[in-house]
Image 1 (cartoon, rainbow, N blue to C red):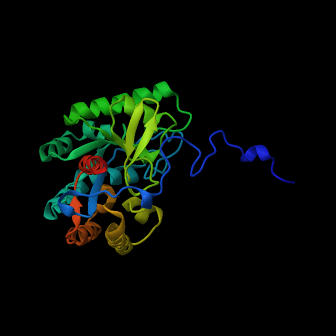
Image 2: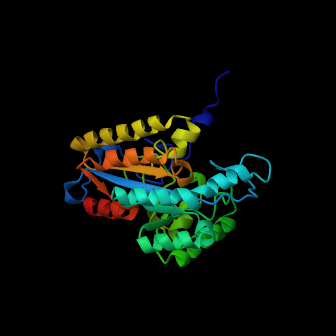
Image 3: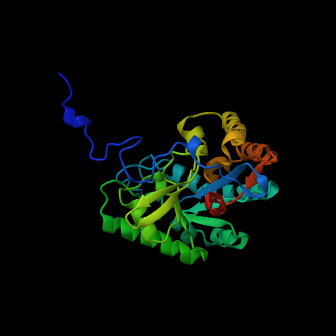
Length: 308
């Protein structure tokens, strides 16, 4: 029995994709982007500071890294908290040792619950982007738009007040979003978001309320994806990051500037047996003379200038 032809007909069937969120283009055919001082590879270190509630509801799913044991799952709850109490300070020392300019993705609840940590980030002057309210306050398909609007409003407004920053970047908890999320982000003054992982360079994303930029925050090179999801070794993590650095640098010779984006978590790489591996990565990348260390907004600003 053959499949009914109606299953092969889509309202927006077209070359390359079946939606109008952005203009289709091949990465290799786009105009070349250049970074400051003739650098070829922009390094974006994105640190996720997260809060997983002990009374996790898991609606409509349990997020990556979420609590998995019956309540109260103190083993995993305290392990996640370890990152915000211990691991993050190892990160900060390592960043300073290797002259890294990190960007911090905060759950708004982290800024509320750890004021001493928020104060340190404010004093450092590092860029802060919003990682939603907390890791159990999820955005998802079919979510009531008013419920999500209120969630985004609370997440962004409270984080802006607590950090005294404009906060123009966003990454959803577990990168999950609804069909309305990008549009609501534009309405709330967000310039770029990091949920879509379908490219290596920034691209313009269209919504009913205006445009924003999709920033390429790699999931394949994320520490939890490699170590927790794929169950690769710490040595393999280092090897994969260094391989990506080498490849992207080589690719710049023909295609212009590229971005190496590393999404990391202090409850994962901030452990005493792993922090040395992060430092191996930072040492290798920063030893490359053609690497430019920058915040997410600095990379985005230079990308826009380069396209003019």
